Length: 241
Image 1 (cartoon, rainbow, N blue to C red):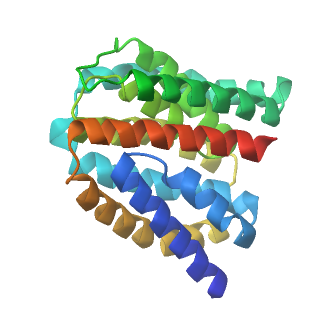
Image 2 (cartoon, helix red, strand yellow; image 1 turned 30 degrees about the vertical axis):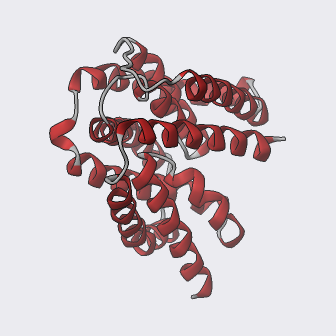
Image 3 (cartoon, rainbow, N blue to C red; image 1 turned 45 degrees about the vertical axis):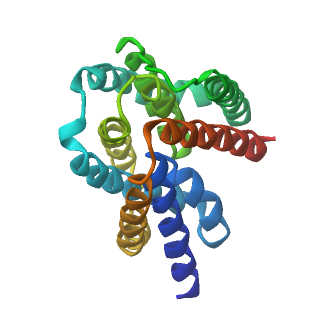
């Protein structure tokens, strides 16, 4: 029971961070709950919890979503699930994580110091690569936020639209990933128990985080987004080395 309580608290905190930044629930919660749960249960339950969380986020901000940014994510996610199988076969998990972490850190630092508060925009074509990378990482490691956050941060959309886009993007990639996990028999009764216990907590944390973020202006929100990306990148590299 104590372990379940600690897992619940970990996911509540992850949900809070996700509510503020628009992503990061899994990357915050997974290190916190790892000592209390087997990885074979943690990853598939994480994917189910985050998919449910992003259904809530996507629905909350649905009217702000700019759908032309979503098409590429959807198309890119399909080969991403397949690519993850081959990537892990020919490249080590450590190599993939370090490469991704370094890229995210450099990207976020450049964005953080180059951001003068003016408008930003990026071609929706980058969504194809974002969807591919997100699905690949989600299938392999259980988290898929940084590639989508890096893409959508440059969409030029206001904070609410960014959160809506992140929610929609995570739903798309999450559905493919969860389906693949289910077809390979990785979702069992232990996974469902963690899912049922932790989901209310992550949703509560998310709602609290959204309330906090509503007090931020667009410039402050972007700063938080990029600082969060730096932290996530450092966390990935730290865990990999």
